[in-house]
Length: 105
Image (cartoon, rainbow, N blue to C red):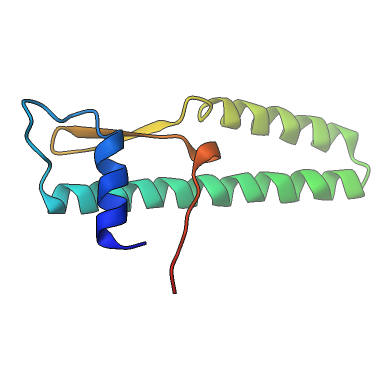
């Protein structure tokens, strides 16, 4: 992703822009870094839950499956409306299920 591309996407999602002031580039980069960190933790945790649930299914362990499924659904409910990252008074809403990450090599 080029710098201008992610900056324009971030500007569209920023809630904290007041009186026509644009966020400094450092703030945008910090928001982007926080968003990527949150997204990474979200994807890691989601994959971990799915792996553990699959293992419980393979072992035919209904009790463990039910417990993990409940925990997964409770955890997932926290992210249904996304999350908010903030930096120096600027906030950005992140909805991980709609996120498409493109990495240009």
